[in-house]
Length: 247
Image 1 (tube, rainbow, N blue to C red):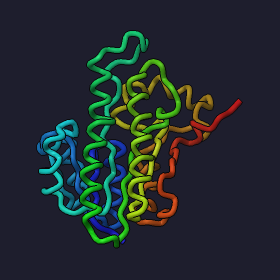
Image 2: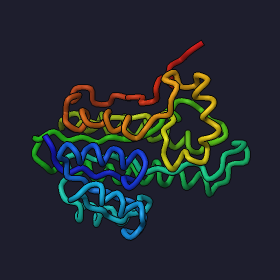
Image 3: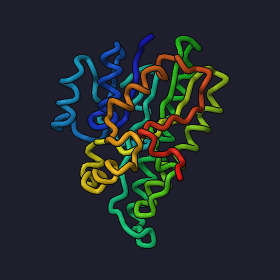
């Protein structure tokens, strides 16, 4: 089964990996991000997926959600992936309100109201075929990094958001899942690559390698296809064992 899927932040990193995997299996892919359609990353993303569409949309602009969804059309799946890191790592006692608000606006508030609108649209559709909503949160929803507390707090909120949508939409047969990436090689983590290289090699990640966007994408495929429909609400870490409790 395939259909149309909307992926926020799908022009690069984890979102692009997911988009390319879904496109390769026949899904009609729509990407949404705040970048101009003329941005190099957007052009490259679209060139890699003939037939995919791009919709310029700032996830924090709640008022523009209706226009976005009208342009995209009926959805079988939403992959809520757009996210931002802390503006600067440092002592949580020094976190600036601007950095805190940015994380909340993008990672939580914007994601919530887009998902709310998508859910309403899905409930107006016939119950078949299977529909789904996938929230890309983070291991940081449960593993604290005091030097980027605002990011962790936003992802913890997003994890609860996924649970709330799962409970609300289960009676309608709409599956909702919380995917928690670990340390993934993306533009977002490029600035801290040197910090993590040695730690990963020393066993911070039991798999002893960086995660790749493709690792997340391969987890998404069976979820949107309905192979795990009765597991709605499941939390799935994709982190090479990073979040395993160890002595």
